Image 1 (tube, rainbow, N blue to C red):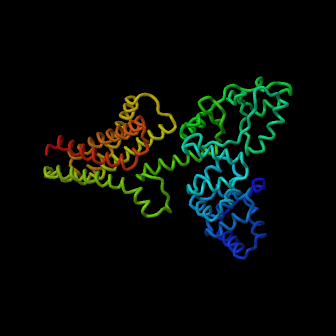
Image 2: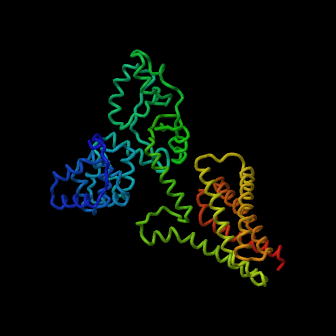
Image 3: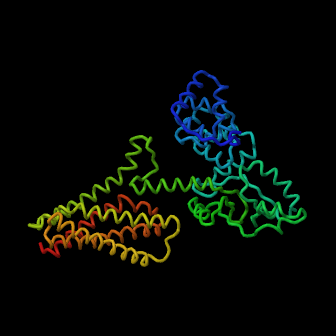
Length: 457
């Protein structure tokens, strides 16, 4: 197996890509297998991501299913989708039979609905087929949609000697044995068993005597983000999945959770940047436009709102027209403070580190905004008056406005994510364009209101 080979440093080079392409074009299958067998399946996937579709399909059909099934999982999603379109239902079924049930279910779920059942019908392993069909019935964002059926379980009534014999058969289907789960005669999860305790126990001891009844688990209908939080909190490599009766259904491993956390981070990053759907750089112009345009429109209307405020005050400014020169300063400061505050809150909400009531959090942010505002205001006062030569009373106005705007932006940036989270809305939408635009408008309004009160125009 490729996984058992000595780990070597892999570097994808243009020369390697050319070498692979030449071996494919010359139909030199022997040398091509010899070359690719030197690499891990993830490295081969990286190579196939760079060659054309026909060549990638050729390699998938050439190598054994034990290797190519793992390669498929590591391919870029769009490349995998196109490769699967070029494989027959039987060929896909052969690949799927080599995968764990969770990965197999993920592959089938990516296929068009009409083709899914066709592939399932070609799977020869009936138990594998039934388990994949069961997983496909769960919501993809639930623990059931993420779990694998492969695990090692033992009954509490077994002896250690009997247990050792029986788990050998189970373990061969499990890539990594993180834990051994203990169940009763109804398959209800009642504990866990470490390999160390099993190996060091006496042969005649019952499993119930050496198992640990304290076992963390998640319910099959829990959201994957909640599962990730549990595993992160308790530093788990795997966690069992049960139904409401605590019947053991499967397990979720850390590699799947890492993928979930990566997807959540990418989604939040896009939301923070003002992109409303999951898109990639290679997507069509239409899809990218639909994802970006809504927030751009919000930003445009926010800018128009700020412009109308400036126009309203512009009529009365008279000799204080110099105030317009510092509008970018107010807008940039308000936007930056708001994004900083909201980003910290969103991060805290994501990892459950935000505690206490909202008033306590807002008061802390008020003090922080006040301290930062005073520091920025002092620097701004000195620069505007002594460097730009702005009249003293105007510089004082700008400094006071900076303090008020910074405090305002900090409070808005803190309040909105918490408010959205309590309403069940992803707080990541509060960062980026939303906070920046709202703070621009309120910042300009406060700026000219303060200026009018102080300067009397």
